[in-house]
Image 1 (tube, helix red, strand yellow):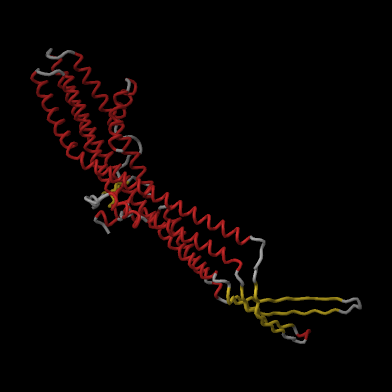
Image 2: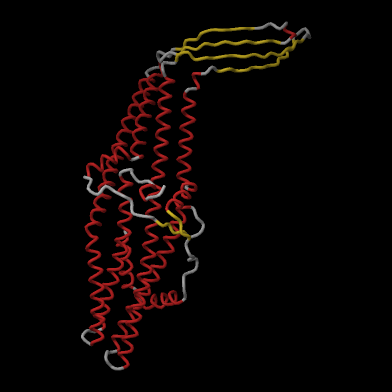
Length: 438
């Protein structure tokens, strides 16, 4: 990600034309672009807490958990009796001109004694729904932390690249001054000054691009956290990851520990309970009912009391229950396949993160050696140019090689930091404690 960005800067600079060069020179010499303000430094723990307080996806996941709790309570309400109060008023007129009126009030009670075990099936389904919501909430938290690490490293990388580009501009300006000085004494042709000036224009364009990248990274990080002003998140240290773990071990840790996979397993259980609930819908219901009604004085306060037991048994519905049960079982199989698809995606994520981190570890010595060699080559090219043993193009080529090596070193540094977090995230082990914070 970062190496592609640095290479893009270099390729873009090489394709610019003179009109863009003039615009970039004006921007560089005119100061910082509008809206670029000094960022506020936050610790990773502070930024994470703020993001958790303001993130809309997290708030939605918290509502899922609350709905799961309420559903669990609703599932057992059938165990409690239902009491209903009634009140009425009536007025009647007869053909002989007489009339009568009255009012009444009463209470009725209904208590389910047996409903084929559906209440306990519904309760288990509600338990699984709550567990799935809690796993979903945990996954959102890990995703927010991973996004925070990615965007923080992108900003820090962009800032370092901006510093590198600034140093590069100063080096090339010095080369232009030296070439102009030697031109005055006739040691180099005018083409040497022109070549150095072109390289300076390219370096200044890279600086403008780097400054823009910083502004974009600041905006994205602030949006993630929910801040109205630019922020910078300081990550205390690289997270600890298993260095010698085999890929299959990491994959098993992902299956056991990833919150999204745990949530998917709960969804399978939910669908199984729903199917069982449908299958039991033709079981008999047994209810006990009772009522008490008191009429007004005009009706001589005639009380009415009633108590009884009701059996309801929908033993034939034209095969509807069987069809609904088959449909519910089909949904169970569908959810199971969706879970297997998630496992496959998790496997790809773990493998990609594992391979990326291993490749970066192998490249670490190469990147350092490349930078060391580029620095030495640049020093020697400058010295040879001063002695007249090299032309300005040799110095400019060495400058290009040094710039690429510096950009690569910055990119590799932050790519590695992000890859460490990505591996933990892929196996479901990323948390704030992994960075040495509570």
